[in-house]
Image (tube, helix red, strand yellow):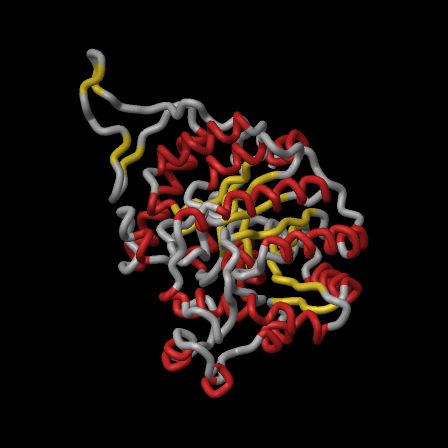
Length: 400
């Protein structure tokens, strides 16, 4: 049954205008003073979620976004800061984009955060989807096969560094350590200092394309998957595909087990009111992520259309009503959301984690906080979820 509730905040600032008739994405440009308001917004969410009994705040690593949509470049630093301002809320790296990191620097930084927060940071990895940031920071993205190869090799290195007292690695992209003289001997192995406090490390990854290769790799390393929300897609195929990959590896998982399913929501007294209120946020999401491939079924002509002001009806751009019908959004009163989540429990009997996001791109700070309170008071109690302390989470993870 569902027992862990999280929310996702990709890191957008408050906008002065929103929706299809508002400023196009490529014309948005904010001052540094406005861009840094994302930290106050994130802190307010974290402290409120901690008071309300939420389990995890997930957020995303992104860079150079002067447009104001995803403005959190270092999740581990932010998590350490927020852990000192909260009591039990955990912080999810959704996700550290490994092609933009040296894997050993990422491993070290996570291990330090693990110690400094007493296990309240959840590790996550991803391949990236913004050419501006991945290619600028030295990783491949336009070459999809190279992106996949370097990602897989980096993850292999990360888990060696986490799990082995000393290690070495020889691959296509990395030779670790380099064969160099050091203090009178030839370097042959390294030890990560420090290694994480809790091992094996709990790790999550978005499931987007759900290819057998990608899912088999996740199962090999016992990486859990997020569907919807973090991956910005919602369908049954990744959920069934993940269990099938486990079966190929001889692991018996219930449908939905070791997965987190995400759904965006907006609560109001009626379905119609909720859709009306949330439409500007949804349209900002489409404007930002449609050209990046995260709105399924858009034609090239429709992608051009969402870069202009208005005209969405003529271009047949999918509406929030369409998203609600597809199940990737819920809009309506709390009792309907309880029914929605209960149906997910019945459909996926192994499901424990739900990422209920009230913070779709564009949602102002005030609205996000109001929605979190409403969810915590009128939706979550129906599931009798019992929050776990960081120590209990670590013990559970270590026993896997």
